[in-house]
Length: 118
Image 1 (tube, one colour):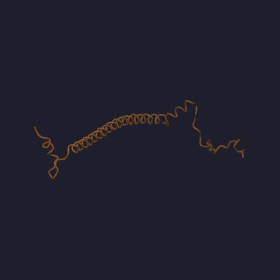
Image 2 (tube, helix red, strand yellow):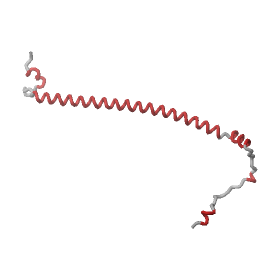
Image 3 (cartoon, helix red, strand yellow):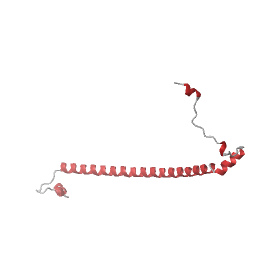
Image 4 (cartoon, helix red, strand yellow):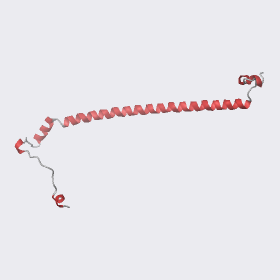
């Protein structure tokens, strides 16, 4: 069996004296605490990366859905604003083309009540 001095020989100082057991234990506790802190930080950062990855995936899917909805709405707008469709609906409603001499451009409307108010 090894003596306690032989066990701590790796902790000998340059002058040949071995470090006290208390100093060695404190050093090991500090090293363990630092390693534990580093591990906790690493796990926390990985968890944050995973959370952000899931968030990015969810937002990408939402963006795809919104782009598809926008595409459908633009198609519907183009269909509803087609000149042939508007002309056909106007004819069904009994509207007729107006000659240019019957077109009047009006200025801003003035309310009678607002004109007399101070």
